[in-house]
Amino acid sequence: HDLHGGQVILESQQEKRVTAVKFSPDGTHLAVGAQGLNGTQPTGRLLRVKDGEVVHVLNHGSVLDAFSFSADGAWLACGGLDPVTLVVPLSADKVEGRSVDVVTGSKVLAMSHVDDLLVSAGRDGWLRMVNFTNDERFEVQVDGTMMDLSIAADGLEVGIGYKKGHLEVRSTDDGSV
Image (cartoon, rainbow, N blue to C red; front, side, top):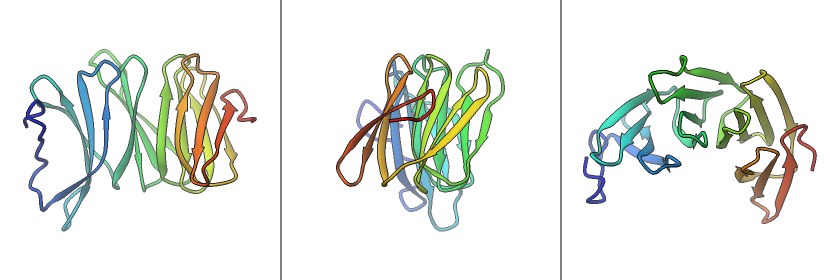
């Protein structure tokens, strides 16, 4: 792995296709999702930027095409085409990884460390929110195909970009516009 030279080779070029890339908030780590080709397992890898070392490998049941770090970089959320969003700790002093089952795969993810809130936009048009602090969960169906989302720094609102070209801001308290 040669991150400073601009290249990372995942297995061989014929076995993997990169599907998602996300830097940690402090820029020290890079999450890379790869689609398995020719029967190989889809994987996610967390690389340390300074030396390109793989520090964590995520074997997921499907292509990983969305990553999100918590604001403090302590947790990584990942999702793909299967019905599971996986949330894993990135330090030894954190508890075991959490698995959040959702109805369908998630295309994009965002996570706010402010109140341990995970927001995911599903391919099925459902915006799902989970607060790990109190285990509160809700989902809201939206009108249109969500393309990207981002949570405000205070964790109170989420901005959603739609394929049709409009932007919407919703409350993370109840999903209202």
